[in-house]
Image (cartoon, rainbow, N blue to C red):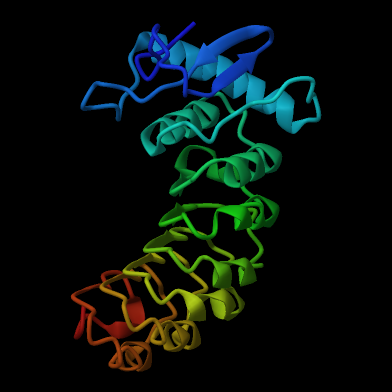
Length: 243
């Protein structure tokens, strides 16, 4: 079986993916737009997603080779895993260690995400540029792993109601971070925002619907000279004079 990510004529330097005795040869797609897989691609990605799930659980009678997948196809595979509810801490750690993972968008399964899931991303610290974990109710705030995500440019903890000053401990090393979304983090307070002011490269900050913030928090952002978008609507203690 082959995708047009999968070609039926491998040139000899592609690396095979062994899927229960069948060989799927992965090569780069000649299509310009590979953001959405076609029917055949989606079918094979589903097979591969199931194989990865088994592999992560210890069924290692064959080798799942992922390093030849393009960044676009890795994201497609990631999407299939989310859609099938087969993404887990173990699978996420496998993808992080064996692929050049760039984006982790956990919107469709954020209710299952725990701190263990995010710690498992550490092997991809040099390649990850975006992490989005909105409305993740099971996160407790162990974010020191973030200090190793030095390539990160976009981070969202939107709606994470357990967000406290402790969560900001890992932010200091995110020197390339440009976008930070903390909307509806209802425990976000002035101290959290004061620590965020250390992110001198920040361009966009969303703290809408954070009821504990006061004018003091906004004043603490003055060192962020690159900040061009600041969203504050719904911050009730600001009384609308700066919203």
